[in-house]
Length: 177
Length: 162
Image (cartoon, each protein chain N blue to C red):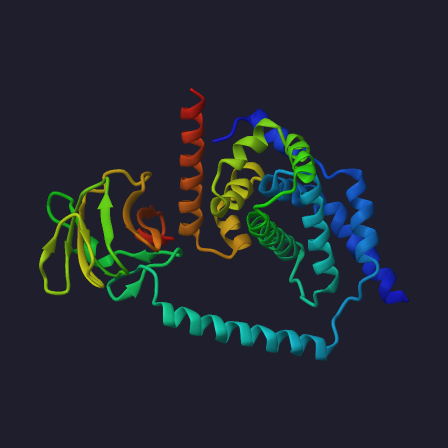
């Protein structure tokens, strides 16, 4: 990815001498630990902020959430067991997904074929304004080095589901918002 | 008194061991020498006041990296909010940007912030994918995805240059 020259150029960057002075003089004046009262006050303030934020978010509704096999797909990844077990003789993965959407959403992928079904089981084309959709993503993942991306685009932004191969976990889906 | 001396000695030792790496990391995010120094200073202040217990040196190093990345992201968020810059300050900002004009820093600037730490740790600091995952507290597959996105961003940059 980077040439040896670039790696060396990066590693040759050192902290300026004046930073040492700046850091050591500033930290020398601080006490190691906070008082318990100060810590509890901070904790209470954090709780108030968390409760307020969760109330705001629950009233706003969630952003795009995508599931496979009943599990929410997160950045940490979810193995795609059902797709692998349902793999056809031609090596096509039929990845089944469910998504909760907000507003008009375009679901697309440069790889494979995407079928989007609304709450009534009707196949939709182009953009959909359904709040819940079922998706079948037919894909032939020929290259374990490659990643395959399914994109959800709506007013809340772009959410990408990436199919990638992990040596230990096998094929996985990760979600990136 | 003895506590303060031992704290100072500890901070000095940690600084000597990790300051260069943390400064490079902060510079790659902030692209500005003074801001990078401020970020590292804040990290050490947090280190001095935190009551965290570290299992070993690697655990401590991982904590310092995570706090540096978080601090840089905070600073960038604040920078975004400051959209209005008075004219006299604009000259200072332009001058500061020239300071981080090295090729490698320019490349790193093109990598999306979310993926930058993984790219730096893996490709420039020599961490394995597993070690990078442990430092950033994310899964191995998340690291792989961030590295892939980082590579794509750089390929895009190469295509633009060509």
